[in-house]
Image (cartoon, one colour):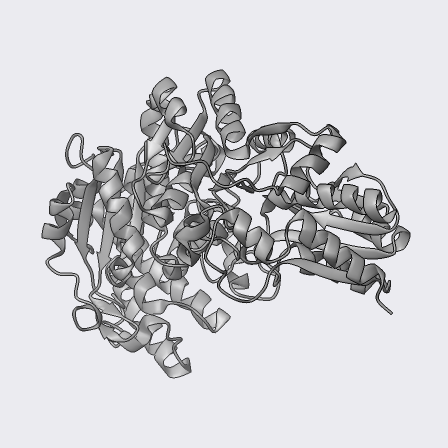
Length: 333
Length: 279
């Protein structure tokens, strides 16, 4: 066992979570693996395809329980996706699981042509996404995947925020007869207040009309904590959206933020080019609405060395960083 | 219905004529490669594959994935002959709003997979063959690769997997016309010795003259070897059947001018006349 990663949350953030009554959940990746195993036990057409990634995908138990429903492709991501497309075209309900960094870059043409264009209903599962691999560095980061995949037609993109959304997204993907990309990190995170998950719809996890945080994936909890801090310390009431579905984007929810709040901050574990932030900015700009707006995310640089927590803090994707961004934006002349 | 070699020969000349007509009409097309693989498609669709329009959704149908998607004109002409769509629709090839794109697309009835980028057909075919093994389904999977295409590394990833999973329901056919856009494949990126490469990867290998119906039928009518994927290395002539196009790299995607077109059709019509077909 490797040493536990440093907590994603500062002492203040942990205390804030406690005041909100949030409970620490499990890594989304583990919840994904459990949900997939349950689905596969119930349906022998559910097939998992891996690229020497069953350990990192938490799929060792799956492999032991259902050896005939897991196909190993070796370290060959292009083949992983091509084979997955072929299996899907022959009626299998396929989950192709590989680190997001390799899956969405090495096999991008297979995703574009064999899955999306040929409309083979594969669920592509990008594991250890974003900067989950931390200090392993740029080769192992996927900060391009939203941008690359958003520009491909016929591909739904989902980055679940917590255990609830993860399970719901896996079940959605298994039932959907369409190409889906699921993006998971591996850090244990607080569970957000329970509500409904609908693909293509934002999940409002906190109401407010001062600042709107539109966040995705593992960043949503940090926005949630920032919102609580802003309310407690500054009397600023924030709306927090988990925009799990990056595409198709819930434009109505984005516009509601622009129309009903005083400022919008998008938050993502992705480069600020081509991701959630620019998607929301595009919706708002084309609506004719003008609003104070900031991207929180990774700038156009190779990240500093550090754990996922270090990198989040460095680029302001933490409770403290998001509070600072919000205060600056709200007091802008 | 079973066809004699003589009947297949006649069909190939008819296909060639139609292929040149639609390329001339569209003002675009991969003429040389379509002509090199035409006899292979003729044998597949008229002797080997159990596919038909009425049963195309059947899970046990054989699968044909054209990895060398650029030779789409050959595929479209053969599919039209097999009744997948009205022959006249071919005149819309590459026209505004036509379903007949310049590479295989499932918008066209009879096409299994959208292809065109090279190095994709074999991995997809491995997936379809794996599903067949999982379901103990009786279908076979065929994929046509260009020889220039073999420089794409994804082919070799798939070649490993096909042997690893003992996919004897999979047959790859290499349309070995020895030419690609830039020139001779051996000069651009040599893949020889090809048979030894596939054999070393764990495949059963068979050579065939890619314009000999009997040899092709013999190689394709049954899996080559139990527990091994099979590859048929088909020696072909790029531009086959039109004298001035044969073995000339520039016809990779050349469209004949009016004079060349008339000359090509005259050659084909002469061959058809020899087969007893007069226009």
